[in-house]
Each structure stands twice: as structure tokens, then as C-alpha cells.
Length: 114
Image 1: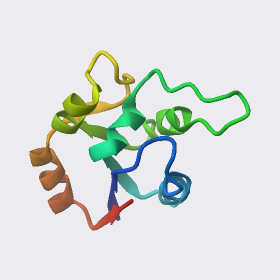
Image 2: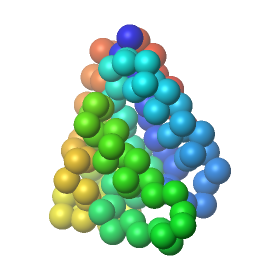
Image 3: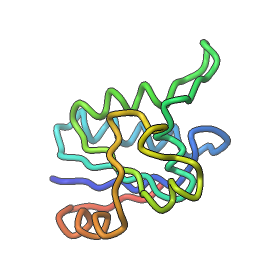
Image 4: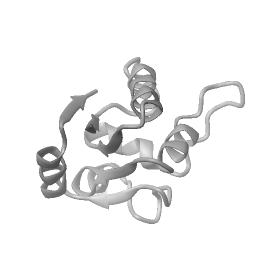
């Protein structure tokens, strides 16, 4: 089964991120195909400068591990409005567009929005 997860929350300050990441981990653990698209404030998850305290959960490390098995996209327009550029984004994120989000949703069996 192919899943598309749409992430709209920032890396910090939103309690939905950790449950969303738990869902993503479960999808990958079951061997399903997965694409993750970051939109709105979710594009901040792509910033390579995310630097939590050493005793805090690190979302960027989680997404880097996910990128070994899943495609990670961030919206170019949402990124431009929030200062996320190809230079500031981690290399395992791919800049994309809403047209690609539409295409991914058509090719997916399930769309899950967080």
C-alpha cells in the first residue's frame, strides 16, 4: 500500500508532530511505500539548522532516517514565505510544488494529514 502523509505542523510548539512521526515509523516498519509532503508551517521541518537541546527528541534526525525509505518533499511556495530555500534545507528534502502534491495524492492509496 502507498501512503502519502501531509505534514503541516512546525518541528516545535505543536503536539501533533510526535504522534505523526510515530505513525510514519509504523508505516515504514510495516513495509509500505511512503511519501511525506511538508506544507505550510511544516516546511520548517526541512531546515538543516534545527538544533534541539541534547536531551530532546530531534525531528531532523528522524526525517533523515525516514529518507532512507521514503520520499520527502517540501512546498517551494510555503518555503519561500518562511525562509526555507534549497540552500537552507537539509539535502534529503526535495523542493516541490502543489502540482506534485496533487500527483502524489492521485498515485497514493491513502492520504493522511497531520
